[in-house]
Length: 211
Picture 1 (cartoon, one colour):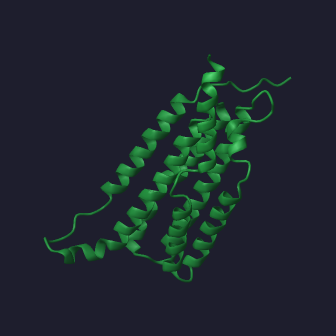
Picture 2: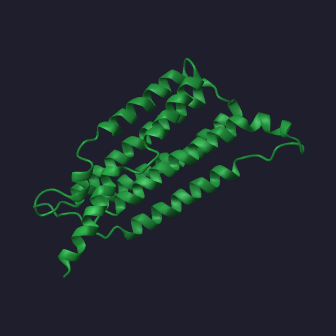
Picture 3: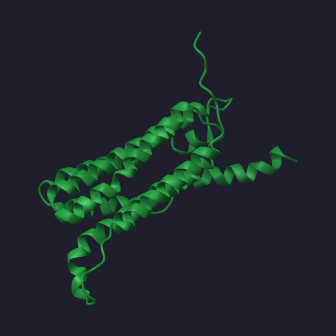
């Protein structure tokens, strides 16, 4: 008979994730070089890198926002959740490397395609994290608040498909890929409303559970 995995509270996972994401953002901004000269002309060669930084900041912010909301529905985690979370952080940690490549090679096929592949893997890692959390946090009735919130993953699948399409489009026209990446960011700019609704329901039910 196999032993069940150790169950832990999610607090340290959230704190660790917040710290790693803060470091990733700090590394990104430190990669921005200082313009040469005092005029605006010195900014022009840096525009691709600044644009890549802005888009990446938004994308990492989207992952953090949704992760933050997600953790409000988590009551317990296990080792599989910890590794799934590390898998997500691994792909997010590659974003500073890719935007540095874009800064050196400009908006060209290889780095823009690599950017799309990194975002694809980060999106898949986030989906995996959701599944692992649901598996570790099974309620007595067989369904968790998170499971109810993310039962339909159509938008997630569309996002992964668009990221892959962007990576492929980058080999033909890099700017088309950039437009696709921006469209996915707009799709997820606001936190997942499905998760917010479950958080609101949990808050409403709290007084009745603790009279």
